[in-house]
Amino acid sequence: MRFDTKTPRCTGGHGRRIAGFATLIATGMLATTPVFAQSTAPAINSGDTAWMLVASMLVLMMTIPGAALFYGGMVRTKNLLSVMMQCFAITALVTVLWMLYGYSLAFSTEGMHAGVFNLHSIVGGLDRALLAGLTPASRYQTVPESVFVMFQLTFAIITPVLIIGAFAERMKFSAMLWFSALWFTIVYLPVAHMVWGGPGSLLGDLGVIDFAGGTVVHINAGIAGLVACIVIGKRRGWPHTPMPPHNLGYTVIGASLLWLGWFGFNAGSAVAANGSAGMAMLVTQIATAAAAIGWTAAEWIAHRRASVLGIVSGAVAGLVAVTPAAGTCGPGGALVLGLIAGVMCFFTATKLKYRLGYDDALDVFGVHAIAGIVGALLTGLLASSKLGGFGTVTSLGGQLWIQTKGVAFTIVWSAVLSWVLLKLIDRTLGLRVSTEQEQMGLDLAEHEERAYNLS
Image (tube, helix red, strand yellow):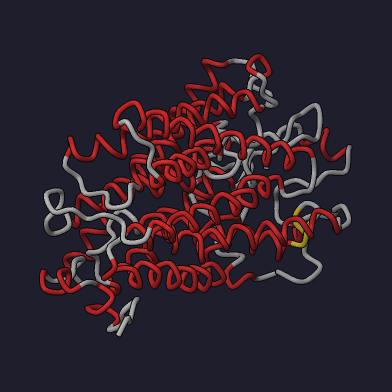
């Protein structure tokens, strides 16, 4: 969590660099080092704790049932259960891995020193493996550390879940599990640590602003999705065979749950029930609505109609774009950010993939990566008080360059390591189901079940 040096207002992502350390200690605020290692700490605040408990449940709801329904409605009937199964299985798998070593590698501060680059600037240590040292009395800022562990777990769950939309309807279930586990370990955890790990973290010390996961979650997952759909190849018949969503009602319900859950995602990243959380919630609503309108307007101009799939996709683009900026931008900035993201993602999701020929089945790259990049780059600008923001940015050009370096690093990190993991799995287990299994559908081929039994 990064704080303004003049006021205790939150201006960055959870786990970020602490600015003005001496001033915060004087005001009795807790730094980002684990609570068990601190000699003093404020009392647990029941209001903050209650809000963070709710926020954690809201973010978990984004995966099950939110993403499961959102993605499930967009695939063909014969693949509905496979997508839902993948969302559910990743939720269980990442939960166990987070307890075993994930939280430690992401948030351990062992060996970290502000301004010093070493291995722990990239990834945390294993001193918190198996959640060592965690007790009911452990605290993170003004909430129990157990609540913070749970909140961060929900972020770790949804990130690999987002990727499955890119290779939907064609990856083996076993390969998906191995890829998710390895990607979570080798790609997600280091990026989370480098951005949110506190003083001494690589991108945190660089000054990258990412309040709730524009780089850590959306660019990271979106780039991995692009690489995955290229490596695994196109669905049989795409783009010549029509593959329309089988149940847009599910998709609308899923998108609505994502919109609701995102308030936990963004406002919860304040790790307190305070003004920062309230503003994050407001700008999230504004940006999402603006992006939905932006996508719909672009679609109306291009195709003389407004589609249901378009408006919900636009809303998701707005949710993604405002995520890194939610702690620092104002309402006006959120409006502009949402409109830009909605229009841009309309063209990348509906035009770019057909022109370049990659089969991103459910537009993970076209929405999450593109909106994440737009949001991350504009975060530095919209944090400035000159543009109605609430951050401490004084040099717009300087912060834009910092954000650009953070985005570029995340793209390269995710692309290279995702490619290596996918190639490794393809050479061992094999990534893709057979032609016959793909034609049959993954529900029957992989799970021997049908989503609909109408007899």
